[in-house]
Length: 463
Figure 1: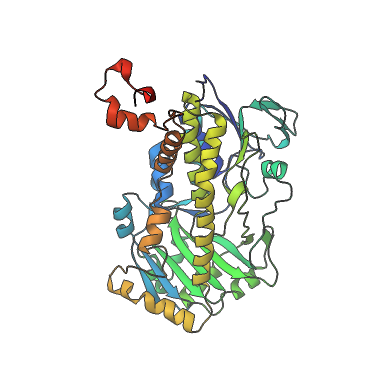
Figure 2: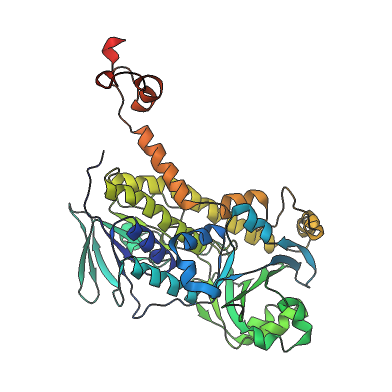
């Protein structure tokens, strides 16, 4: 068993959503946490993001939801449509929320990030901006040494790479690994004020209540939902390009609008209101054989380890799960029940297959939404017909409400999973009598409960 430690110094490279979530969870576990952020000021770029129930669970557990407040928006229903606007599936989200006991929130990335920063600092995390990492030394005995481009040096017992798809931590550990787009699929992000949309009477149905809308089309889709206390209409517009997109690109707005020229006239009107947009790559990392150094003193999380396509809204959520899981296992390192190497081993063994599962589900949902016209799309829409009648099918191509997928993806509890993984690990590694193979757990359950203390576990010589 590990010896009790008084302190555990943990460094995180990257103060994005996943890194800050990990910082909060690890600080709550009793470790000393330092976050090194390359940017000159804290903030988050982009637009809206979904905090599905598996992520909302963590925001509530850490009190981040109280800080964000009304900027966490709940929506009433999800509607799946053909590109002409015809509804083919969907239903009320309250069914998912009641089943899982957690809300499904929509939020601007900036508001989410601000809430995480606030709670991280309240939990004692030391956040350094303008601290781009230049080098990492982890192979010699002793702590991990980190130097920034500005010449500052840091020493950590554990270094966590939470620095996204361009991770310097991953490049240090695995220089040959390079995130890449699995297809030519990419996405625009855009925001339009509801006040502007409501000026057009023909758009009332789309904005009369908080809903999530998905327009599916061959090789493209549009998903929309409210953010910023219901003031802004957020859009993610998926499409394909002739060649894979590997970096954020400026776009010609005529090209932007032309990609959706044959969609529902109502959503086209809103697209025409977008002043500027950028094209974002959808990069996938891994699956990797390991996320850590051989010494288990450097480890990856989030997009640095397992970036995925965005079609199930699980990129940030999965990074937050990583952080929550790390917080639980490192709590046992702080208490002395697990060594650092054991904690990281448990984390990798549990989280690596879960992240790979999320990568697959995300890709497959995108495939469902991008189906070309033909029998496959007809079958997809036919399978969702019962949803329009208010019924809940046992199985549906609408993965946002499919019972199995909802439980496996949105019903996942990272902290409970970590607790179970720790319990299982400790049971497998508990002491046992070398000659009989009897473990203390079974001896306590069957025999030791009635024996005098001096004769308890283990007594092979008396057998």
